[in-house]
Image (cartoon, rainbow, N blue to C red; front, top):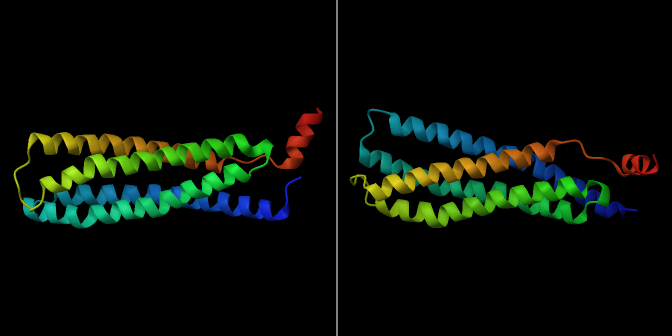
Length: 171
């Protein structure tokens, strides 16, 4: 039988995961929408666009690490403390959330860091390296957000209660 303190911790971790995953997804979508609007705004010159990106991206990654990082931690706690009957879905959520976070960290280290150097100082000509890194960042972010969406869907699925698990075992 699950100890009441464990049950409370699992419930808290599960709720945190369920709230933080869509919070991150919504924040990321809002970031992309505003970023595209800024990049396409005809009155902004190249230097202004570069400055906006240099200001905005650190906040994007910070928001990612706070929301998705906390969601991954909560999902892992829930998976480790979950009862046997509900563990499979909890492990799936923890795995997907952690994978999404690791991809985002890799994007920061291997794409954003070199990319920001190419637009500092602002207004520089776009090189082939810039284009390649920018395209890679788009693809990597699509992958990591798709995985986060899958994690959010899995986290939102109804969980089987210990009573339901016992009833199915006796049938």
